[in-house]
Image (cartoon, rainbow, N blue to C red; front, side, top):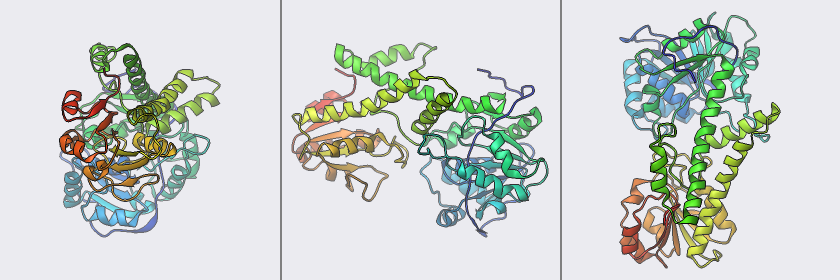
Length: 464
């Protein structure tokens, strides 16, 4: 791994990701082509897509002094953002959105061509969902490239920001129909719930480009951000993205496998994880056991990396094992739940507390909690869920309006997401509402002694 703070030498081909949106007229809220920066040269930037990555990129680049137009096909989303209302739960987003709009450096519209017209740099930031063959679906990426190309000035740089198959830059270039535009990779490493912090205070900035001048242009957008710069060929930049997520998934699966071993030998995984995490070669992050990894990135990226390895003729057995451990971990949580109700889940009411894939977000994509709910329902359990950010019905379970409603009459509670609201819950009151006070703490969020004093049968993950 290189941690060069400057720009490296000649680079090869590649990129990062993302794509399409709609074609409606821009919202008349602000003129995004006004404003200047006190931190360096201001660039006219287009951001295609206003999801987690795109919206974070747009508001943060405007904060850094650039003039930004951001497009998305969702008209309601455009109206809300143009009015200063965040469309995702993300700490610090509202303040930067308001700042950019008020300064005239940020505007939202429904047309990709409107956003890209006259822009020197275009970030493609729309989803690349997992296809039926487990490869990343690039249809939206290619569509966005076709839409923006006709309105870009000569020498403009198109930046792939999300995650696409390694070596996809050529496919994007083919959409331009012109040879005077460049494709650069700038993969994102944003954690949901911490995206603003991660953009403005990143662990590293990775850029993949065919030529150092193109890399320098993209890096200049981040003037004022103190972080190591890694400049490489585009294929290497894209591989960094996939490899980073695969390694994080590996650490979580390793922690869960060690937790299973700890249960078998009577050890405490919390102490074991602390002991190995203090080794600087290992580090403490992602060593907490839980219900398995999920979200919008790790499941999709591990599947895509396995498919890429297979296509390249490499048997990535290690990563296949990581995915299998993750699947088994969800089944282990269900087995713990069944054990606390006497072995038979059919007809038992289970309170599933926490539905998002992690706390601090409203994202349900590939949530371990929902996978557990599906397994519980398949074994005949009545599942009633609660989450502070989730309303309305979900397939296979009823969503309660508060945790006590979910707990009322339940034979067992499963803590699936590490919300502070659950840690501070009145569990003595909860015990009185339940048919039998028992809890499977899949996040080791609660204090076992406190729970037992409240009358609960308590079972964590990897703890005595």
